[in-house]
Image (cartoon, rainbow, N blue to C red):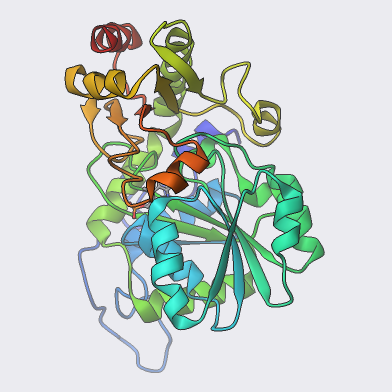
Length: 377
Ligand SMILES: *Cc1c(COP(=O)(O)O)cnc(C)c1O
């Protein structure tokens, strides 16, 4: 079955009880235990809920994993996955990882004795150089945020396997439609389902998918124990959002490609970062592991003044954090997502004060181009 069909027909397209073509929202905390002698599938909704289960089974199928888990947010998914590690163990994390992941790795897990090193994951020799006897996992994100840097997933996974490490990939920017890291040998995939999977800027949620029963058992123990589970209503919204993932991303990606090409021709734009452009560094590696360039791009203007005045003048696009929604969203990393990062560190990573990030939505792209044109004047 091709991916688009799988989104609609994955075993969770109807309620097995009634044939309803939408999984009901089981708004329930506990379940009648009819026969104390017999184990039953559901007993308490932190441990399991049928609506959440439908979502978990669906994302497991879409990522070609053995088991899926739904959490209260992308960060709940990430923190729950990282909670399978123990004090004294060591993780290698890509240096341009999502800001929230950086924050919990340095400010939270470090307090519990988990060691973390950050590295430019585009440089596999640098990754190799960080591996220690107590290293347990690589944590990767590609394309990265906000510069769309590419990590060679196959190379990194090969390196991890040579050293007995797990590979964890935050696949939020690509979604399972465009990139399936488990197929390349990764062990865990994480999503902020708040972004493309939900797709409508109306729900916060997170997902994790694993390969193998042993890992599934460890993550289930954290999900059930910590209890950062996704509620039934939000699980239903994600099931609904997933059905249109492919059509949304196909259209948004087309728009992103056209907008990126147009931006490249603008005199006030110094550089455009988008894997769909010929000159993008890592483009070949990206297309060897992903099925499209995605719907997010960044661009640097000719000056900080241009960037600031653009953010003031832009009308159609929303000015906001987040991405992956039906509406185009523009953000200013230096003052929004990466404001907590010291300026020197930002500049070292290439996140200048004239850099803007765009998540292209479902508007007609010609209207977006008109809006960008007036905002750049
Ligand atoms: C938004 C985001 C997260 C965090 O997800 P939340 O749902 O906001 O908790 C993690 N990783 C990436 C790449 C993101 O864009």
